[in-house]
Amino acid sequence: MNEVMTRREAETLFPNEWVLMDNTEPVTDGNYRGRVLAHGKDKTEILRQAKGQTLPREVVVFFTGPVVPPGMKVLL
Image 1 (cartoon, rainbow, N blue to C red):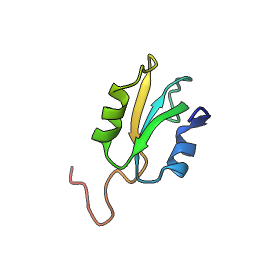
Image 2: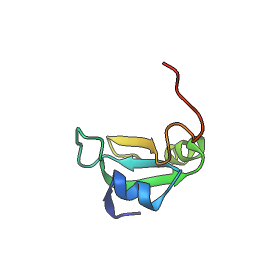
Image 3: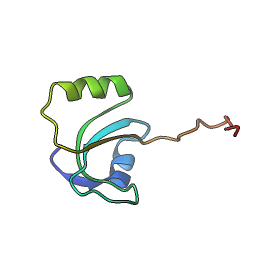
Image 4: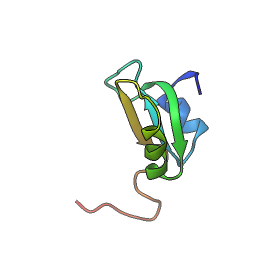
């Protein structure tokens, strides 16, 4: 994909997937802006895909689904 998008737009396009994105416009609020370089259900697979590419200087990897699966609780 060559289109520059925000993290929120990537979350809408690729629900419950891992996304590797170049970080062309660094921000502090976590809503990265850049191009999606790879995406998929398996984090290991997108990182494997990334090895074969010449990556930009700054990239981010994030999951677009819930951090804690529904029905599970976090104990602190």
